[in-house]
Amino acid sequence: MDLTKYRPFETTGGTITASIGGSGPPLLLLHGFPQNRLMWQTIADILSTHYTLIIPDLPGYGDSDAPANVEAASKRAMANQMIEIMVQLGHEIFDVAGHDRGGRVAYRMALDYPERVSRLAVLDILPTSDYWAKMDRGFALKIYHWAFLAQPYPFPETLIGAAPDAFIDTTLKSWTATKSLDVFAPDALASYRRNFTDPIRLKAMCDDYRAGASIDVDHDLHSQSIGTRINAPTLALWGASGIAQSAETPLDIWRNWCVDVCGEPISSGHFLPEENPRDTAAALRAFFC
Image (cartoon, rainbow, N blue to C red):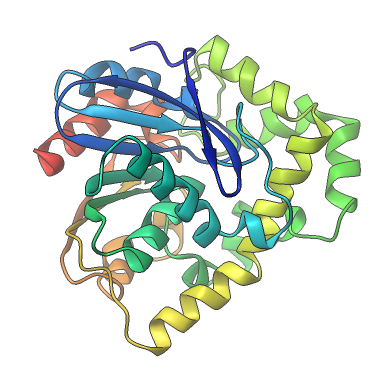
């Protein structure tokens, strides 16, 4: 499946680009920061014989339009756009898997649209409000970018814009198990770097994190306050040396949010689909079969 080919979809939040391929039941794959749809290439090659894969660029990433403001960068707003794409394709009910920021869009979708999401997989994340609540010294050093990128415009954009490759390369390496860029395909890595040289996309990524420090937390806390839980069967995967496991046992946290959850660690750092695509794809295949 060639993820360099894509289709544009018009949504209420702007144009979203997505690669579509494979055959079988629909499976929506959502990427994380600081990446785009190309992070799924090897996984797509494995899963496309079993599923119809819909692999979009989230708003402000890859080739998709940037959100208009911080509210439009909320995971609820992004989830709405993903739903619009799936409905346009005729998929009223579907499975979804998301890594990193895409995982946050995915679990918000499962909370807001329980009638749409059949099954949910989240890769190397905990819910946003839980991350902020557990931000101790060690965790803050590991995910310092949460607070940095959420600073008011244009502070983080100015600093990153002065040395974009240094920022993204250091960030990517620090979250891998091997502390190396070797796990990333050259064309994918080039596309990740390219977005950091575009002021519009750089602001969009920062707005993503500004939403994560404000409106996304409010949405999480409201869901908890009214007792809303994720009804869809949920799979939580995390890197054995990734980010999610450094806060607390992921399943213990997800059990507070999900009616039915299972999961396991994958031998990798944060970037499961690129560091260990074989085991990640096998776990997703076993869950979504």
